[in-house]
Length: 482
Ligand SMILES: Cc1cc2nc3c(=O)[nH]c(=O)nc-3n(C[C@H](O)[C@H](O)[C@H](O)COP(=O)(O)OP(=O)(O)OC[C@H]3O[C@@H](n4cnc5c(N)ncnc54)[C@H](O)[C@@H]3O)c2cc1C
Ligand code: FES
Ligand code: FES
Image 1 (spheres, rainbow, N blue to C red):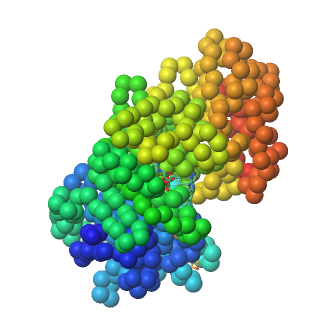
Image 2: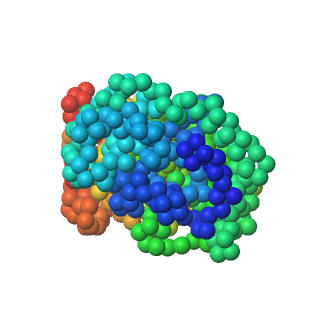
Image 3: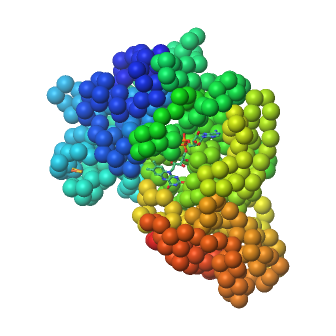
Protein backbone atom coordinates (compact mmCIF):
# COMPACT_ATOMS: atom_id res chain seq x y z
CA UNK A 1 0.00 0.00 0.00
CA UNK A 2 1.42 3.41 -0.99
CA UNK A 3 1.00 5.88 1.88
CA UNK A 4 1.36 9.55 1.10
CA UNK A 5 -0.23 12.93 1.62
CA UNK A 6 -2.40 14.18 -1.20
CA UNK A 7 -2.11 17.86 -0.43
CA UNK A 8 -3.04 17.71 3.27
CA UNK A 9 -5.05 14.50 3.25
CA UNK A 10 -3.43 11.24 4.42
CA UNK A 11 -3.98 8.78 1.58
CA UNK A 12 -3.42 5.10 0.93
CA UNK A 13 -3.37 3.54 -2.49
CA UNK A 14 -3.08 0.07 -3.94
CA UNK A 15 -2.67 1.05 -7.56
CA UNK A 16 -3.99 -1.20 -10.34
CA UNK A 17 -0.70 -0.60 -12.16
CA UNK A 18 2.20 -0.50 -9.65
CA UNK A 19 4.35 1.22 -12.30
CA UNK A 20 1.75 3.87 -13.25
CA UNK A 21 2.66 7.57 -13.33
CA UNK A 22 1.64 10.36 -10.98
CA UNK A 23 0.03 12.13 -13.94
CA UNK A 24 -2.17 9.14 -14.81
CA UNK A 25 -3.15 8.82 -11.18
CA UNK A 26 -4.19 12.48 -11.02
CA UNK A 27 -5.92 12.72 -14.40
CA UNK A 28 -7.36 9.23 -14.83
CA UNK A 29 -7.95 7.89 -11.31
CA UNK A 30 -8.80 11.11 -9.47
CA UNK A 31 -10.10 12.99 -12.50
CA UNK A 32 -8.04 15.99 -11.40
CA UNK A 33 -7.36 17.56 -14.80
CA UNK A 34 -5.39 20.62 -13.68
CA UNK A 35 -2.01 19.03 -14.43
CA UNK A 36 -1.71 18.70 -18.20
CA UNK A 37 0.00 16.20 -20.46
CA UNK A 38 1.94 18.03 -23.17
CA UNK A 39 4.85 15.78 -24.12
CA UNK A 40 4.89 12.86 -21.64
CA UNK A 41 8.68 13.03 -21.78
CA UNK A 42 9.71 15.59 -19.16
CA UNK A 43 10.29 18.36 -21.72
CA UNK A 44 7.37 20.80 -21.52
CA UNK A 45 6.58 21.12 -17.80
CA UNK A 46 2.78 21.16 -18.31
CA UNK A 47 2.45 18.28 -15.82
CA UNK A 48 4.57 19.91 -13.08
CA UNK A 49 3.49 19.09 -9.53
CA UNK A 50 5.28 19.78 -6.26
CA UNK A 51 6.62 17.16 -3.89
CA UNK A 52 6.98 17.92 -0.19
CA UNK A 53 9.54 15.93 1.80
CA UNK A 54 10.97 16.10 5.29
CA UNK A 55 14.59 17.28 5.23
CA UNK A 56 16.54 18.08 8.41
CA UNK A 57 13.35 18.30 10.44
CA UNK A 58 11.64 20.78 8.06
CA UNK A 59 9.69 20.60 4.82
CA UNK A 60 11.37 20.86 1.44
CA UNK A 61 9.24 21.54 -1.65
CA UNK A 62 10.44 20.67 -5.14
CA UNK A 63 8.90 20.72 -8.60
CA UNK A 64 8.90 17.49 -10.61
CA UNK A 65 7.41 16.21 -13.87
CA UNK A 66 4.38 14.05 -12.99
CA UNK A 67 4.40 12.37 -16.43
CA UNK A 68 7.67 10.52 -15.81
CA UNK A 69 7.34 9.86 -12.08
CA UNK A 70 5.95 6.51 -10.95
CA UNK A 71 3.18 7.05 -8.39
CA UNK A 72 4.70 4.42 -6.08
CA UNK A 73 7.83 6.55 -5.62
CA UNK A 74 5.68 9.04 -3.67
CA UNK A 75 5.41 6.66 -0.69
CA UNK A 76 6.21 8.76 2.39
CA UNK A 77 6.00 12.10 0.52
CA UNK A 78 3.48 14.88 0.03
CA UNK A 79 2.00 15.45 -3.42
CA UNK A 80 0.82 19.03 -3.94
CA UNK A 81 -1.43 19.64 -6.93
CA UNK A 82 -2.48 22.87 -8.61
CA UNK A 83 -6.12 22.30 -7.61
CA UNK A 84 -5.17 22.73 -3.96
CA UNK A 85 -3.53 26.14 -4.16
CA UNK A 86 -6.72 28.21 -4.21
CA UNK A 87 -8.46 28.37 -0.81
CA UNK A 88 -12.21 28.93 -1.16
CA UNK A 89 -12.56 31.93 -3.46
CA UNK A 90 -9.07 33.21 -2.71
CA UNK A 91 -6.31 32.57 -5.18
CA UNK A 92 -2.86 31.61 -3.87
CA UNK A 93 -0.45 34.60 -4.11
CA UNK A 94 1.35 32.78 -6.94
CA UNK A 95 -1.89 32.51 -8.93
CA UNK A 96 -2.88 36.09 -8.10
CA UNK A 97 0.45 37.41 -9.39
CA UNK A 98 0.02 35.43 -12.62
CA UNK A 99 -3.43 37.02 -13.14
CA UNK A 100 -2.20 40.53 -12.38
CA UNK A 101 0.82 40.22 -14.70
CA UNK A 102 -1.25 38.72 -17.56
CA UNK A 103 0.91 35.59 -17.55
CA UNK A 104 -1.62 33.28 -19.20
CA UNK A 105 -3.40 33.09 -22.56
CA UNK A 106 -4.69 29.66 -23.65
CA UNK A 107 -3.82 28.41 -20.16
CA UNK A 108 -2.45 25.00 -21.13
CA UNK A 109 0.99 25.64 -19.66
CA UNK A 110 -0.28 27.75 -16.74
CA UNK A 111 -0.80 25.06 -14.04
CA UNK A 112 2.75 23.79 -14.68
CA UNK A 113 4.21 27.30 -14.43
CA UNK A 114 2.19 27.95 -11.27
CA UNK A 115 3.59 24.83 -9.63
CA UNK A 116 7.20 25.66 -10.58
CA UNK A 117 6.69 29.19 -9.24
CA UNK A 118 5.08 27.83 -6.07
CA UNK A 119 8.09 25.55 -5.41
CA UNK A 120 10.45 28.48 -6.06
CA UNK A 121 8.47 30.73 -3.68
CA UNK A 122 8.52 28.08 -0.95
CA UNK A 123 12.30 27.74 -1.09
CA UNK A 124 13.45 31.34 -1.63
CA UNK A 125 13.05 34.41 0.53
CA UNK A 126 13.69 36.97 -2.25
CA UNK A 127 13.26 36.97 -6.01
CA UNK A 128 16.36 36.73 -8.20
CA UNK A 129 15.65 37.10 -11.92
CA UNK A 130 18.36 34.71 -13.04
CA UNK A 131 17.29 32.05 -10.52
CA UNK A 132 13.63 32.55 -11.55
CA UNK A 133 14.60 31.90 -15.19
CA UNK A 134 16.45 28.76 -14.10
CA UNK A 135 13.46 27.61 -12.03
CA UNK A 136 11.12 28.13 -15.03
CA UNK A 137 13.52 26.72 -17.65
CA UNK A 138 11.60 23.42 -17.73
CA UNK A 139 8.23 25.03 -18.50
CA UNK A 140 7.34 25.90 -22.08
CA UNK A 141 4.68 28.38 -23.18
CA UNK A 142 3.75 28.75 -26.84
CA UNK A 143 1.49 31.80 -26.55
CA UNK A 144 2.15 34.27 -23.76
CA UNK A 145 5.84 35.00 -24.06
CA UNK A 146 7.93 34.60 -20.98
CA UNK A 147 8.29 38.20 -19.75
CA UNK A 148 4.86 38.47 -18.05
CA UNK A 149 5.39 35.06 -16.45
CA UNK A 150 8.81 36.04 -15.10
CA UNK A 151 7.28 39.34 -13.88
CA UNK A 152 4.61 37.33 -12.05
CA UNK A 153 7.29 35.14 -10.45
CA UNK A 154 8.99 38.28 -9.12
CA UNK A 155 5.71 39.91 -8.05
CA UNK A 156 4.54 36.89 -6.02
CA UNK A 157 7.20 37.81 -3.44
CA UNK A 158 5.23 40.95 -2.58
CA UNK A 159 2.73 38.74 -0.66
CA UNK A 160 3.75 37.00 2.56
CA UNK A 161 4.99 33.41 2.34
CA UNK A 162 2.48 32.10 4.89
CA UNK A 163 -0.16 29.96 3.23
CA UNK A 164 -2.17 26.83 4.03
CA UNK A 165 1.00 24.72 3.73
CA UNK A 166 2.90 26.85 6.24
CA UNK A 167 0.03 26.64 8.76
CA UNK A 168 -0.20 22.86 8.33
CA UNK A 169 3.57 22.24 8.43
CA UNK A 170 3.73 20.62 11.89
CA UNK A 171 0.89 18.25 11.02
CA UNK A 172 2.43 17.45 7.64
CA UNK A 173 5.81 16.70 9.19
CA UNK A 174 4.39 14.30 11.77
CA UNK A 175 2.22 12.53 9.17
CA UNK A 176 5.24 11.99 6.90
CA UNK A 177 7.46 10.90 9.79
CA UNK A 178 4.80 8.38 10.85
CA UNK A 179 4.83 6.81 7.37
CA UNK A 180 8.64 6.70 7.25
CA UNK A 181 8.98 5.15 10.70
CA UNK A 182 5.92 2.96 10.77
CA UNK A 183 6.25 -0.84 10.58
CA UNK A 184 4.97 -1.90 7.18
CA UNK A 185 5.38 1.69 6.00
CA UNK A 186 9.16 1.48 5.88
CA UNK A 187 9.77 -1.09 3.13
CA UNK A 188 7.25 -1.18 0.31
CA UNK A 189 6.29 -4.05 -1.99
CA UNK A 190 3.45 -3.95 -4.52
CA UNK A 191 2.25 -6.69 -6.84
CA UNK A 192 -0.79 -6.87 -9.10
CA UNK A 193 -0.20 -10.44 -10.28
CA UNK A 194 1.75 -9.29 -13.35
CA UNK A 195 3.95 -6.43 -12.22
CA UNK A 196 5.90 -5.90 -9.00
CA UNK A 197 7.42 -2.84 -7.40
CA UNK A 198 9.83 -2.81 -4.46
CA UNK A 199 11.10 0.13 -2.47
CA UNK A 200 13.87 -1.03 -0.09
CA UNK A 201 15.32 1.33 2.51
CA UNK A 202 18.76 -0.24 3.02
CA UNK A 203 21.54 -1.11 0.61
CA UNK A 204 21.62 -4.74 1.83
CA UNK A 205 17.91 -5.13 1.09
CA UNK A 206 18.37 -3.58 -2.33
CA UNK A 207 21.22 -6.01 -3.05
CA UNK A 208 19.12 -8.94 -1.79
CA UNK A 209 16.10 -7.96 -3.91
CA UNK A 210 18.26 -7.62 -7.02
CA UNK A 211 19.59 -11.13 -6.45
CA UNK A 212 16.08 -12.49 -5.94
CA UNK A 213 14.86 -10.66 -9.06
CA UNK A 214 17.81 -10.54 -11.49
CA UNK A 215 15.43 -9.46 -14.29
CA UNK A 216 14.31 -6.38 -12.31
CA UNK A 217 14.94 -2.87 -13.59
CA UNK A 218 16.22 -0.30 -11.12
CA UNK A 219 14.47 3.04 -11.11
CA UNK A 220 16.09 6.07 -9.49
CA UNK A 221 14.82 9.46 -10.77
CA UNK A 222 13.08 7.70 -13.66
CA UNK A 223 14.00 10.53 -16.06
CA UNK A 224 15.50 8.07 -18.54
CA UNK A 225 13.69 4.90 -17.62
CA UNK A 226 10.14 6.26 -17.57
CA UNK A 227 10.52 7.47 -21.16
CA UNK A 228 10.63 3.76 -22.03
CA UNK A 229 7.03 3.58 -20.77
CA UNK A 230 5.69 6.84 -22.17
CA UNK A 231 7.55 7.00 -25.51
CA UNK A 232 8.18 3.35 -26.41
CA UNK A 233 5.28 1.72 -24.50
CA UNK A 234 7.69 -0.81 -22.99
CA UNK A 235 6.79 -2.63 -19.82
CA UNK A 236 8.95 -4.28 -17.16
CA UNK A 237 7.73 -6.96 -14.80
CA UNK A 238 9.67 -5.73 -11.79
CA UNK A 239 10.86 -2.29 -10.75
CA UNK A 240 13.08 -1.64 -7.74
CA UNK A 241 13.22 1.98 -6.56
CA UNK A 242 16.55 3.21 -5.16
CA UNK A 243 15.28 6.59 -3.89
CA UNK A 244 14.67 5.46 -0.29
CA UNK A 245 17.92 3.51 0.24
CA UNK A 246 19.40 5.51 3.10
CA UNK A 247 23.10 4.72 2.43
CA UNK A 248 22.74 5.72 -1.22
CA UNK A 249 21.21 9.11 -0.45
CA UNK A 250 24.41 10.52 1.05
CA UNK A 251 27.04 12.89 -0.31
CA UNK A 252 30.23 12.33 1.69
CA UNK A 253 33.71 13.79 1.52
CA UNK A 254 36.94 12.07 2.40
CA UNK A 255 40.34 13.76 2.36
CA UNK A 256 40.81 12.88 -1.29
CA UNK A 257 37.36 12.37 -2.80
CA UNK A 258 33.71 13.40 -3.09
CA UNK A 259 31.51 10.32 -2.79
CA UNK A 260 28.06 10.59 -4.35
CA UNK A 261 25.52 7.95 -3.30
CA UNK A 262 23.84 6.03 -6.11
CA UNK A 263 20.44 7.58 -5.37
CA UNK A 264 21.52 11.23 -4.95
CA UNK A 265 19.81 13.67 -7.32
CA UNK A 266 21.73 16.35 -9.19
CA UNK A 267 19.94 18.99 -7.10
CA UNK A 268 21.39 17.36 -3.99
CA UNK A 269 25.00 16.92 -5.14
CA UNK A 270 25.50 20.11 -7.18
CA UNK A 271 26.73 22.20 -4.25
CA UNK A 272 29.52 19.76 -3.28
CA UNK A 273 30.61 19.27 -6.88
CA UNK A 274 30.71 22.97 -7.72
CA UNK A 275 32.58 23.77 -4.52
CA UNK A 276 35.45 21.58 -5.70
CA UNK A 277 35.02 22.02 -9.45
CA UNK A 278 33.55 25.50 -10.06
CA UNK A 279 33.55 24.89 -13.80
CA UNK A 280 30.77 22.29 -13.30
CA UNK A 281 28.32 25.03 -12.33
CA UNK A 282 27.25 25.83 -15.88
CA UNK A 283 27.06 22.18 -16.95
CA UNK A 284 24.90 21.24 -13.96
CA UNK A 285 22.61 24.23 -14.51
CA UNK A 286 22.15 23.09 -18.12
CA UNK A 287 21.57 19.40 -17.38
CA UNK A 288 17.87 19.02 -18.17
CA UNK A 289 15.58 21.40 -16.31
CA UNK A 290 15.15 22.01 -12.58
CA UNK A 291 12.31 19.45 -12.53
CA UNK A 292 14.69 16.91 -14.13
CA UNK A 293 17.61 17.72 -11.79
CA UNK A 294 15.32 17.39 -8.77
CA UNK A 295 14.74 13.75 -9.76
CA UNK A 296 17.67 12.65 -11.94
CA UNK A 297 20.64 10.93 -10.30
CA UNK A 298 24.28 10.82 -11.34
CA UNK A 299 24.18 7.01 -11.08
CA UNK A 300 21.24 6.93 -13.53
CA UNK A 301 23.16 9.25 -15.87
CA UNK A 302 26.12 6.85 -15.81
CA UNK A 303 24.16 3.55 -15.88
CA UNK A 304 21.86 4.62 -18.68
CA UNK A 305 25.01 4.47 -20.84
CA UNK A 306 23.87 7.08 -23.33
CA UNK A 307 26.82 8.27 -25.45
CA UNK A 308 25.48 11.84 -25.11
CA UNK A 309 24.96 11.91 -21.33
CA UNK A 310 26.73 14.88 -19.74
CA UNK A 311 28.44 13.40 -16.69
CA UNK A 312 30.38 10.43 -18.15
CA UNK A 313 33.00 12.54 -19.99
CA UNK A 314 33.47 14.60 -16.82
CA UNK A 315 33.82 11.50 -14.63
CA UNK A 316 36.22 9.88 -17.10
CA UNK A 317 38.41 13.01 -17.29
CA UNK A 318 38.49 13.23 -13.49
CA UNK A 319 39.30 9.49 -13.21
CA UNK A 320 36.21 8.79 -11.09
CA UNK A 321 35.40 5.27 -9.93
CA UNK A 322 32.18 3.36 -9.39
CA UNK A 323 31.60 1.31 -6.28
CA UNK A 324 29.58 -1.58 -7.73
CA UNK A 325 27.74 -3.99 -5.45
CA UNK A 326 26.32 -7.45 -6.05
CA UNK A 327 24.92 -9.06 -2.91
CA UNK A 328 27.59 -8.62 -0.24
CA UNK A 329 30.42 -8.31 -2.81
CA UNK A 330 31.69 -4.91 -3.89
CA UNK A 331 34.29 -3.86 -6.46
CA UNK A 332 35.73 -0.57 -7.67
CA UNK A 333 35.66 0.11 -11.40
CA UNK A 334 36.96 3.25 -13.13
CA UNK A 335 34.13 4.95 -15.06
CA UNK A 336 36.29 4.74 -18.21
CA UNK A 337 36.10 0.90 -18.04
CA UNK A 338 32.34 0.80 -17.41
CA UNK A 339 31.35 1.35 -21.05
CA UNK A 340 31.74 -1.61 -23.39
CA UNK A 341 29.67 -0.67 -26.43
CA UNK A 342 26.58 1.32 -27.39
CA UNK A 343 24.38 1.15 -24.27
CA UNK A 344 26.45 -1.82 -23.04
CA UNK A 345 28.21 -1.74 -19.68
CA UNK A 346 30.50 -3.90 -17.59
CA UNK A 347 27.81 -4.11 -14.89
CA UNK A 348 26.98 -7.76 -14.11
CA UNK A 349 23.49 -9.18 -13.51
CA UNK A 350 22.19 -8.14 -10.06
CA UNK A 351 25.00 -5.59 -9.74
CA UNK A 352 24.34 -1.89 -9.19
CA UNK A 353 26.14 1.41 -8.58
CA UNK A 354 26.22 2.00 -4.86
CA UNK A 355 28.43 5.08 -4.99
CA UNK A 356 30.44 7.27 -7.36
CA UNK A 357 33.86 8.31 -6.09
CA UNK A 358 35.23 11.50 -7.63
CA UNK A 359 38.80 12.50 -6.74
CA UNK A 360 39.15 16.04 -5.41
CA UNK A 361 41.14 18.42 -7.64
CA UNK A 362 44.89 17.89 -7.50
CA UNK A 363 47.35 20.76 -7.15
CA UNK A 364 48.48 22.20 -10.46
CA UNK A 365 45.66 20.74 -12.57
CA UNK A 366 43.11 22.75 -14.54
CA UNK A 367 39.63 21.44 -15.26
CA UNK A 368 37.06 22.64 -17.80
CA UNK A 369 33.96 21.11 -19.34
CA UNK A 370 32.03 22.43 -22.35
CA UNK A 371 28.56 21.34 -23.43
CA UNK A 372 27.48 22.05 -26.97
CA UNK A 373 23.73 21.90 -27.54
CA UNK A 374 21.20 23.64 -29.76
CA UNK A 375 19.33 25.22 -26.87
CA UNK A 376 20.94 26.59 -23.74
CA UNK A 377 18.49 25.02 -21.28
CA UNK A 378 16.89 21.62 -21.12
CA UNK A 379 18.69 20.18 -24.14
CA UNK A 380 20.90 17.14 -24.61
CA UNK A 381 24.48 17.62 -25.86
CA UNK A 382 25.57 17.25 -29.45
CA UNK A 383 29.01 16.86 -27.92
CA UNK A 384 30.48 17.46 -24.48
CA UNK A 385 34.22 17.78 -23.86
CA UNK A 386 35.99 17.56 -20.49
CA UNK A 387 39.66 18.53 -20.00
CA UNK A 388 41.88 17.90 -16.97
CA UNK A 389 45.43 18.98 -17.58
CA UNK A 390 48.57 19.72 -15.57
CA UNK A 391 51.12 22.20 -16.85
CA UNK A 392 54.50 22.41 -15.11
CA UNK A 393 57.15 24.89 -16.16
CA UNK A 394 55.33 25.59 -19.44
CA UNK A 395 55.14 21.87 -20.34
CA UNK A 396 52.09 19.59 -20.23
CA UNK A 397 52.95 16.93 -17.66
CA UNK A 398 49.57 15.16 -17.58
CA UNK A 399 46.39 15.32 -19.67
CA UNK A 400 43.04 13.59 -19.56
CA UNK A 401 40.66 14.57 -22.34
CA UNK A 402 37.25 12.90 -22.63
CA UNK A 403 34.28 13.41 -24.94
CA UNK A 404 30.64 12.40 -25.09
CA UNK A 405 28.70 12.46 -28.36
CA UNK A 406 31.76 11.56 -30.47
CA UNK A 407 31.46 7.75 -30.48
CA UNK A 408 29.15 4.93 -29.38
CA UNK A 409 30.48 5.34 -25.85
CA UNK A 410 31.87 8.28 -23.89
CA UNK A 411 35.64 7.89 -24.12
CA UNK A 412 39.09 9.38 -23.71
CA UNK A 413 40.88 10.95 -26.63
CA UNK A 414 44.15 8.95 -26.39
CA UNK A 415 45.87 10.39 -29.47
CA UNK A 416 45.01 13.92 -28.47
CA UNK A 417 46.36 13.31 -24.94
CA UNK A 418 49.61 11.84 -26.31
CA UNK A 419 50.04 14.87 -28.56
CA UNK A 420 49.84 17.10 -25.48
CA UNK A 421 51.85 15.24 -22.83
CA UNK A 422 55.52 16.24 -22.65
CA UNK A 423 55.01 19.13 -25.08
CA UNK A 424 55.29 22.86 -24.56
CA UNK A 425 51.91 24.45 -23.69
CA UNK A 426 51.60 26.66 -26.77
CA UNK A 427 49.45 27.19 -29.82
CA UNK A 428 51.57 24.89 -31.99
CA UNK A 429 51.06 21.96 -29.60
CA UNK A 430 47.32 22.69 -29.49
CA UNK A 431 47.12 22.65 -33.32
CA UNK A 432 48.88 19.26 -33.39
CA UNK A 433 46.60 17.90 -30.64
CA UNK A 434 43.53 19.18 -32.53
CA UNK A 435 44.66 17.19 -35.58
CA UNK A 436 45.30 14.13 -33.41
CA UNK A 437 41.75 14.34 -32.09
CA UNK A 438 40.52 13.41 -35.58
CA UNK A 439 42.27 10.03 -35.13
CA UNK A 440 40.44 9.41 -31.85
CA UNK A 441 36.86 9.64 -33.06
CA UNK A 442 34.72 9.07 -36.13
CA UNK A 443 31.52 10.75 -34.98
CA UNK A 444 28.15 10.13 -36.63
CA UNK A 445 25.73 12.61 -38.20
CA UNK A 446 22.28 12.82 -36.66
CA UNK A 447 19.58 15.42 -36.01
CA UNK A 448 21.69 17.03 -33.28
CA UNK A 449 24.77 17.70 -35.43
CA UNK A 450 26.69 16.49 -38.48
CA UNK A 451 29.85 14.39 -38.09
CA UNK A 452 31.94 17.27 -39.52
CA UNK A 453 30.45 19.74 -37.07
CA UNK A 454 30.99 17.41 -34.10
CA UNK A 455 34.66 16.93 -34.95
CA UNK A 456 35.36 20.53 -35.76
CA UNK A 457 33.59 21.93 -32.66
CA UNK A 458 35.39 19.39 -30.44
CA UNK A 459 38.76 20.43 -31.86
CA UNK A 460 37.81 24.04 -31.24
CA UNK A 461 36.87 23.24 -27.64
CA UNK A 462 40.48 22.21 -27.07
CA UNK A 463 41.58 25.53 -28.50
CA UNK A 464 39.06 27.34 -26.32
CA UNK A 465 40.42 25.54 -23.27
CA UNK A 466 43.92 26.69 -24.23
CA UNK A 467 42.80 30.29 -24.79
CA UNK A 468 40.89 30.38 -21.51
CA UNK A 469 43.87 29.16 -19.59
CA UNK A 470 46.15 31.58 -21.39
CA UNK A 471 44.04 34.62 -20.72
CA UNK A 472 42.27 35.38 -17.49
CA UNK A 473 39.59 36.77 -19.77
CA UNK A 474 36.30 35.58 -18.37
CA UNK A 475 34.66 37.36 -21.27
CA UNK A 476 35.72 34.41 -23.40
CA UNK A 477 33.32 32.28 -21.43
CA UNK A 478 30.37 32.89 -23.71
CA UNK A 479 28.00 30.06 -24.50
CA UNK A 480 28.42 28.31 -27.82
CA UNK A 481 25.56 26.83 -29.74
CA UNK A 482 25.55 23.97 -32.24
C1 LIG B 1 13.61 16.39 -20.45
C2 LIG B 1 14.89 15.69 -20.19
C3 LIG B 1 16.08 16.39 -20.30
C4 LIG B 1 17.28 15.74 -20.07
N1 LIG B 1 18.43 16.46 -20.19
C5 LIG B 1 19.61 15.84 -19.98
C6 LIG B 1 20.82 16.56 -20.13
O1 LIG B 1 20.83 17.76 -20.42
N2 LIG B 1 21.98 15.89 -19.94
C7 LIG B 1 22.01 14.55 -19.62
O2 LIG B 1 23.09 14.00 -19.46
N3 LIG B 1 20.87 13.85 -19.45
C8 LIG B 1 19.69 14.46 -19.64
N4 LIG B 1 18.53 13.74 -19.52
C9 LIG B 1 18.59 12.31 -19.22
C10 LIG B 1 18.40 11.94 -17.73
O3 LIG B 1 17.75 12.95 -17.02
C11 LIG B 1 19.74 11.66 -17.05
O4 LIG B 1 20.46 10.68 -17.74
C12 LIG B 1 19.56 11.27 -15.58
O5 LIG B 1 20.75 11.48 -14.88
C13 LIG B 1 19.12 9.82 -15.38
O6 LIG B 1 19.04 9.58 -14.00
P1 LIG B 1 17.74 8.94 -13.32
O7 LIG B 1 18.01 8.87 -11.87
O8 LIG B 1 16.51 9.64 -13.73
O9 LIG B 1 17.81 7.49 -13.96
P2 LIG B 1 16.64 6.44 -14.21
O10 LIG B 1 15.80 6.87 -15.34
O11 LIG B 1 15.95 6.10 -12.95
O12 LIG B 1 17.54 5.19 -14.65
C14 LIG B 1 18.31 5.23 -15.83
C15 LIG B 1 19.03 3.86 -16.00
O13 LIG B 1 19.99 3.70 -14.96
C16 LIG B 1 19.71 2.51 -14.20
N5 LIG B 1 20.06 2.82 -12.82
C17 LIG B 1 19.56 3.81 -12.04
N6 LIG B 1 20.21 3.84 -10.86
C18 LIG B 1 21.13 2.86 -10.89
C19 LIG B 1 22.11 2.39 -9.97
N7 LIG B 1 22.28 2.94 -8.76
N8 LIG B 1 22.90 1.35 -10.35
C20 LIG B 1 22.78 0.79 -11.57
N9 LIG B 1 21.85 1.16 -12.47
C21 LIG B 1 21.04 2.20 -12.14
C22 LIG B 1 18.22 2.23 -14.42
O14 LIG B 1 17.90 0.86 -14.25
C23 LIG B 1 18.06 2.70 -15.88
O15 LIG B 1 18.49 1.68 -16.75
C24 LIG B 1 17.29 14.36 -19.72
C25 LIG B 1 16.09 13.66 -19.59
C26 LIG B 1 14.90 14.31 -19.82
C27 LIG B 1 13.62 13.55 -19.67
S1 FES C 1 3.82 16.35 -20.01
FE1 FES C 1 5.51 17.51 -20.74
S2 FES C 1 6.88 17.43 -19.05
FE2 FES C 1 5.28 16.11 -18.45
S1 FES D 1 -0.61 30.26 -22.26
FE1 FES D 1 -0.88 28.97 -23.98
S2 FES D 1 0.84 27.66 -23.88
FE2 FES D 1 1.23 29.09 -22.35
